[in-house]
Image 1 (spheres, rainbow, N blue to C red):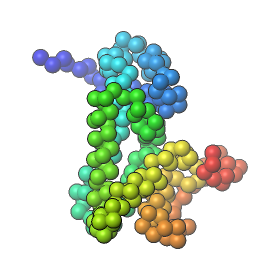
Image 2: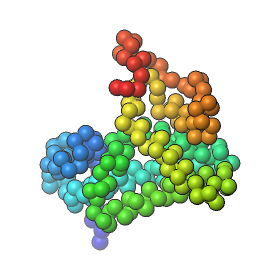
Image 3: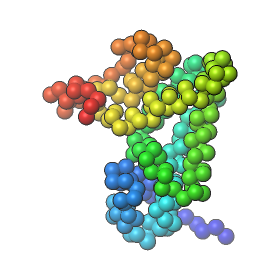
Length: 220
């Protein structure tokens, strides 16, 4: 008989994943102990092992659940039955917006996947391949001639290169937002620099930004 989970189990589990992602993103996976994760979450170390058998499994769940949300974006957009270019534009925008709410998780996925055990790494890499294949398929639909030239995969990876590293320079609360950058990335991908307009929606300056800190741009 399966063990009955206490009320709030999933809520506590999600909180642990979020706090662990924050610690791993700030300090690095290798430099963070399970004891520190437990302290951050306000639970005992024994309680932490009730949710995850070890630190590697905790890392794997952070990566896999982040990828699951990205895969859900792909499935939802595909279900709309849009033409290829609108579908690609929507996927780009949705991915960028998803990253805005998961910067810690995305940093962990990008920087710490190398620490996963072979079994966990295989599952995570397959999740990444699913997403790449989905976008590459749309690129090929838009430009079928590029498949013969062998450029579909490289162009897809260039697109991911534009969006996957935003966490290193685009911070929440700045004047230029993730919501604004999604359409900009799509315009840049489809039309080059000349296609980017100045009409992208920008976040309103908060009271704390009126001293000009927001206007200093994206370099902080």
